[in-house]
Amino acid sequence: MKYFHRTHLSPDAAIAAASEYFGARLGASEEADRRRSFAGPIGEVSVTAAAEGGHYTLVTVVTNQPAESEIDKFAKRFLTLLHTSADPTHRPIGAY
Image 1: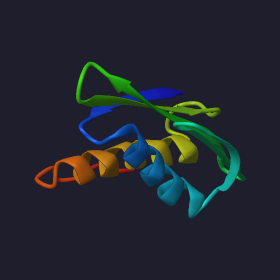
Image 2 (image 1 turned 90 degrees about the horizontal axis):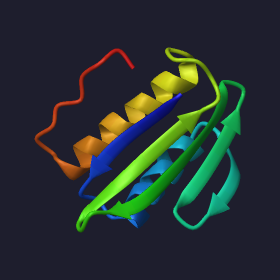
Image 3 (image 1 turned 30 degrees about the vertical axis):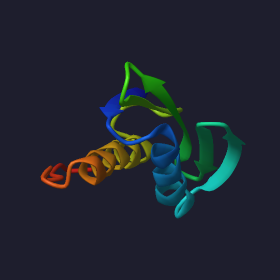
Image 4 (image 1 turned 180 degrees about the horizontal axis):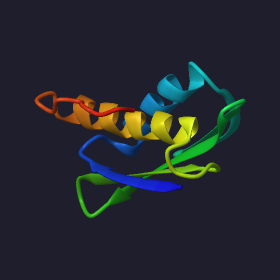
């Protein structure tokens, strides 16, 4: 599955957040400029962050599992928490 999120955070801040979030549970499998990949028993996930249209950053999260798998819920939760870090008034709710 592929998920997208546009944020006001810098690409470097988004990648740092991904490393902290996914690295706590999965092993790093690739590290490149503004791209990180992680793998573990629940699946694989890769995160890219690219500057887009001025002060926006496009964050793309790709997993190797079908929707509603554990890794997909983990990925969606990351994007929700990323939104909250950019906008503290955002209330993270959801079953993931």
